[in-house]
Length: 449
Image 1 (spheres, rainbow, N blue to C red):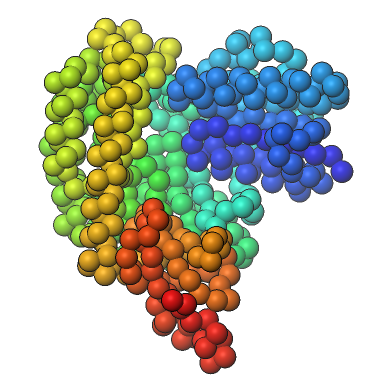
Image 2: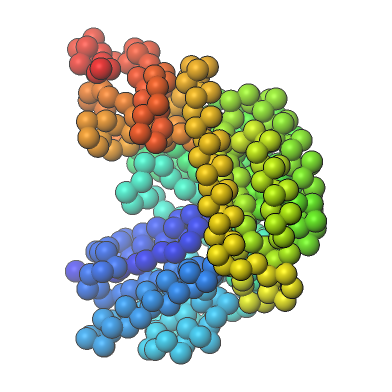
């Protein structure tokens, strides 16, 4: 049996696309093996969000090339955002069989069979690159890509030049894939895109992300829906209203801020002000009091003086949120910030990032205490058992730990919080979850102290 190995860098969109690529190989009789093992085909799904991911992508190619030196029949394929923007540099690495543009990831299997590939300028792509899979390897939840591309052109970001203009997936394709995945036991779905809030089905008038979520909630076997990162300007009142009344959408929202300085927001081409962001968070909490709010922040943007960083830190300290993803600024060639003055030294950037992460820990701890003290009922899908505890990522994005018997992975349960435990909350299973089971199973499947 022939073997295929892959390695993926970067975002969940890349991870989803790799799952779809590998599913094509699996259906055609290939065995999927770890990237460190010998294989007939090596696939690198690259990323260019930072200098570090550029390096990792190149290093993965070099490892595959070493295998090709031992066996000339080995095929090497690279795709993704790094190779999209750096095709010439990738060619210089060695004997790579195919460099495939981001809009043809869905055709990798066929390209290998035909031995033909036409690398295209991603900015010319007009159609959503339809990819689907009925299996998500080693996951308790399924990530579903519904949107690609971005036209926001933030000054620091290279992704629009690697992903192209916004394109969206047809509603019917999304619904059909989720229905098939529910038949394979999946109950939780994460809906994502490069700029998710730009989702719209061109074949349905005024059909946006909220309309899609309304339709997905109607699928009986879907128990939990999550949405990935969504820009503050695209978090509409319509979405807030739906989230406040939904029985399945997780009350967890990741909303990028990037900086808490109006001056920097303007220079980074972010079309909102700090107070706009504060009002959005307040509106979400008003409608969904126990919502978990995650924030993206970049420290060390060009022009970020000590005073402007302090302004950001002060704003965040006063804001009601749950956690931060703090990133150190990484210069990307071809972006506006690459030409800007006021660059911040690396050691200063790192100190600022560390300070933000400490604030994130304080905010998360405060949120956990709130969930416990208010006895908020949590929902989650059973994952694996480790050290006598099962675990799940709750609908409020807090890791929960619990004991029980005869629990199956991907089983949907509700929980009562007990207290802090490890990096999250120790819980007990709500007993009504077993009311439909036989008396024998109810007796056995009880919570364990």
